[in-house]
Image (cartoon, rainbow, N blue to C red; front, side, top):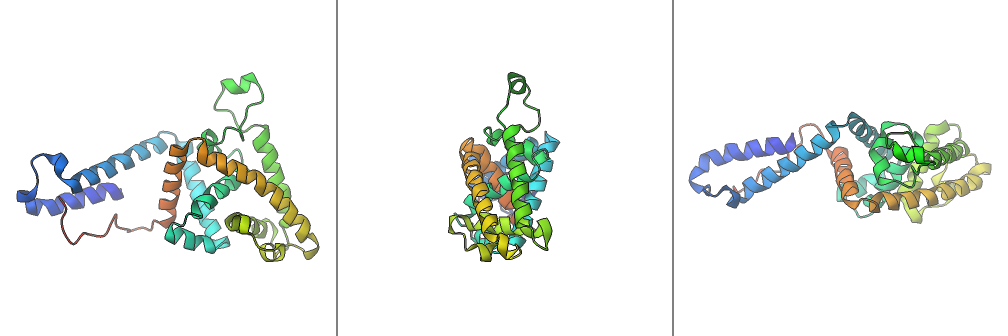
Length: 246
């Protein structure tokens, strides 16, 4: 809708300057840019609306990432500045979201990008691409559940998720266990930290696969996720230029 509105606004402005429009329309830079943006947006829309599970998966993943911003405020600064670290954090969080429920629509969204996590167990599995998650994803999900149980203090799994999110955002520069897991019982912090590090080593491998198995598809998805996270109702497509570029 933003790209469509941008094209309409451009045409309204151009209407007052038709004497400057080049008859060979492809030489009007502003028109070409807006048409290309609209075409790209339309293709993306068609991809997701063609399979409702993909749209629902994207919606759930964006909601998960929005919750991560509250748990780890440092991520907001990465998002505001489009810091390179953000694009290491996003795939980690996407993997954690998937492992929280390997049978939710997020699985349909990420499964083509994570073949090793959904490796089939038999020839029958290989013949049906629409089957649910396989052994690796289920085992990783169970491991995640165990980590959350270890981390859970008085706040329960909500506090545990916040702690795990902070670790995913902190990456290799993670702080001491007491800083990352303040809600965890002090006697359990070291054991919890060891379990978290074991899980995060696996998550890191999957996050690399997520980025590298099909880079073009992941780049498109991460662009969509960032766009959704920063978008607010009423946002304009772009500031109105001081000078009309035809």
